[in-house]
Length: 123
Image (cartoon, rainbow, N blue to C red; front, side, top):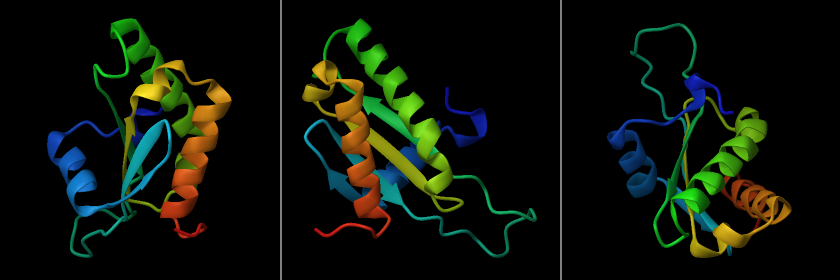
């Protein structure tokens, strides 16, 4: 499970990541990434942790399928959140093929999208 500090929950944070961030699409998911632009005048000594949120629409499948996809994505993101810069926002939007995708396929798509967004891949 993704730790509480690394969860994206507020609507404004989702909107910021989707509207002002960059995105990378793969066959089973789209990843929206907003780098950790922190306010130097904000209170606190350390940078906030990277946070991730998930969007799984009804197009992916019924409630059971959607919840299963969310659980799988949260588990995959838990292993990758340490790679993200502090303060960054990530929104993973599942596409309809994610409902029938294997864990390896979801992991491969997530890794490829994150690598592209973090500057490791070509367009």
